[in-house]
Image (cartoon, rainbow, N blue to C red; front, side, top):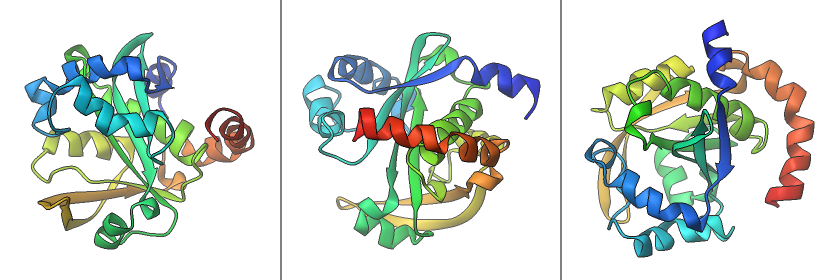
Length: 207
């Protein structure tokens, strides 16, 4: 990793999503630049409670976080084990132990400013590979979202395939990309060295 990545990584943190964050989620998702790629339905706090409340309360297995940059809430990011969603797992057909990840930068000041790849790398290292213990991670942007695809490539993801996915009656194509701990720049060493501590953290504050 170069000095620029290390410098940016030191400015990034993640905290669990809370109910108090849901008005901010409504504001972020109301931005046309976010909503065109990340649609969470009706833009009300009530609907956000319906969508994200079970995750916040630990009922849903998806782990949801607020991305923090320089001490400011900047966006949303989530991860889940693909196997926890059997219908989706059947359709994407990826390796056992794979996790999925979805994200957006809600604050416009951080978009088109080189933050997408560093945020994703940091989340892969700290949460997906170290805490969740995933053997690989996949992300499935819309094939037309070239800006996101470029950012994911910079984070270390590589193209795997395009799949046609049907979820809740809605059909869409996903440009599936994948990465393993060994393919993450600096990630394999980081994961091995921190996985013991991360496991304790999961037992104490997540489980």
